[in-house]
Image (cartoon, rainbow, N blue to C red):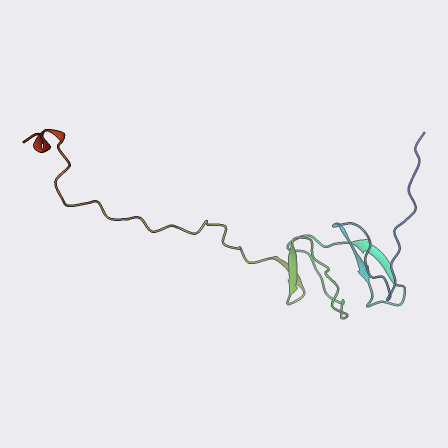
Length: 94
C-alpha cells in the first residue's frame, strides 16, 4: 500500500512551496506549486518574478545555468627566500 502526501500549496501571501524542486506559479489564473524547469527548458510565460528554473535563471525564455562563482581560496603572500648566509654554530666558538 502507498500513501501520498497532500499536494503542496502556495499563495500570494506565502509564495513558498517548501521544496527546491517546486515554485509557486503566480503568473497564471490558478496559483499553485509546479515543478521547476530544467536547464535548457522553456520558461516562457512567467511574469511575476517567479524562480522558474532549477539551478538557473530564465534568459530569453530559456533556463540557463547560473554563472560560475569563484571558489578559489584567497592566497597568502609568501616571503622571498633569505639571501644571507646560513647561521653556522662553529663560527661563534672564538
